[in-house]
Length: 250
Image (cartoon, rainbow, N blue to C red; front, side, top):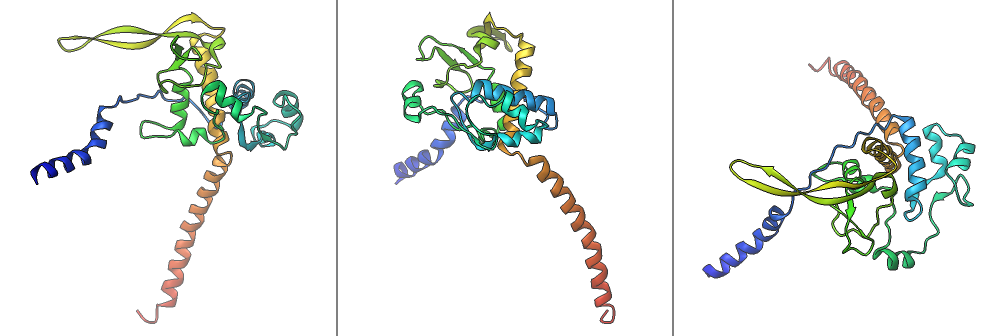
């Protein structure tokens, strides 16, 4: 009986032990501002140029970008590179089966990726911001790339010409009475952008992806604020009505 109880205890603790044994992922804070229209417009341009080739955004329409201060003509001239109409969904022509054979997995739709990647370690924006800055060269991977945030990812580094090529390098850290070695990312070959420029570009891209995941977010917050104010005022009216109604009883 004691052996059975021990085995049962181990089975119950196994998920907890596995979680505790895993590496804790530290995400960088994404410096985004959903009210920065210049950043959102820049992010939309980067998304169309670098992401919309392989990934679709099937729940987003091009004309929704008018909310970012763009005219219909600006959208058609600068952000629509196919025969799509301004009211069409942001889809791609890549065949899912072919994409799976090329990358090992079908590239996911990115419409709500900024919401789906939210976790206890940070928001979806933090995950995307860290992920897009954490690619490194790995000769053992089919695409030649790997990622410290998403190990053995099938996606190649679409922004490598801008960021450059990073490698994993050993970095010694002095602890209390001991020296430990950590693996850190190091820029091996510079890209066309400086580190600061690349981080700013990624921040704009992530800013747009956060907007795309919920385009009515700011409007929803505004409406919610007005609703709370209305309910607050209604409370006093209802309370005054209650006192008037029950004044003869009390």
